[in-house]
Length: 405
Ligand SMILES: *Cc1c(COP(=O)(O)O)cnc(C)c1O
Image 1 (cartoon, rainbow, N blue to C red):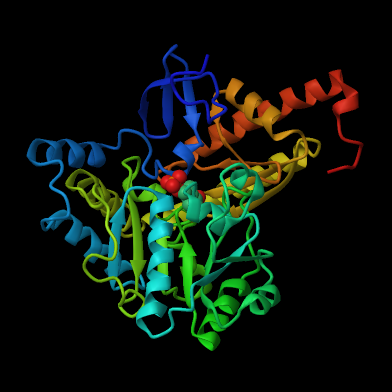
Image 2 (cartoon, protein in one colour; image 1 turned 60 degrees about the vertical axis):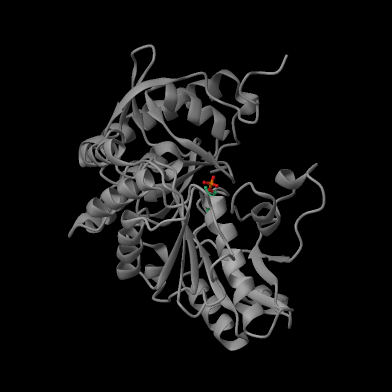
């Protein structure tokens, strides 16, 4: 018999009753340090007073009116996102996949209204993740997610991540845009060479293409800049973001320059829920905190501290941890031991983490995390590594060869 919740997830047998800051309390009363962060969503942790206030105050006024009418809170959030970024205009939706769908549509429409309707193809990158809708799955081109769902949506050319030359060779007269994550999140916190985004920007400029960034995971301060593209000194034409933007309330946003969005006129795109007053009230409250002076600097400092502490753990446990990588508070711990064993051992120690590709576990603490929580997390991960090592000794056939790390 099928489960009441369609069984598309391999869930841990664990549920939570309440949360505060970086901490969650399970329904059986155990406290956990949450470095899974709702998969980079809980940017301000759990039950942040400013978010609770914004949501409950708005809930007393009006929840939803639809986009038949003006929504002042959405206009305000759009203006603030524009002020803080490259963008001139914003479309609000409800998830990361929708934000990227909106970005793809914006890029294609740009060429259509520029007299080049043949320019529809988009260069994308292997092992990317752009969401679970049919178009975003086709954009990423990862076979295991496409299997059994029919012919992939057309119009995407996949090349190796980080390979500028391959991207250049994939450009044809039909190419409209390049779509890329500044750091690949789901596939294992894969950080490309620093020149990669700059190179893609140059390619786009040379060939009249739009540079479209997927900052669903890397955006909203996660890497220590408001958006990760700021690290490279370039600006995109279109950008999709979501996850941290609502701090746990579902919001997606497609940001674009006025030029890139010139085809997006009345009737070309829409979303019933997109930009609804509840979501926008929370989004504005998230921005109040993230854009406050000094906040992102603290994210960078804590990211650095965490990576230093984790590097020490790697040296201490070379048969469990192979590498520490990432930027800001988007941190990947590539494991020698099976990732699932490390995640389970960490959970036993009261630390929640998230899996990613390449046998990496992600540490995605709330951006408000402090020195104490980082020290606690490292202590718990240390204990988890010791557990995994003990298990390796019991079943030596499963242990990696000496020096494998
Ligand atoms: C999570 C994610 C998405 C999809 O977001 P959803 O809200 O699950 O639709 C898209 N792109 C990237 C880079 C992501 O990390």
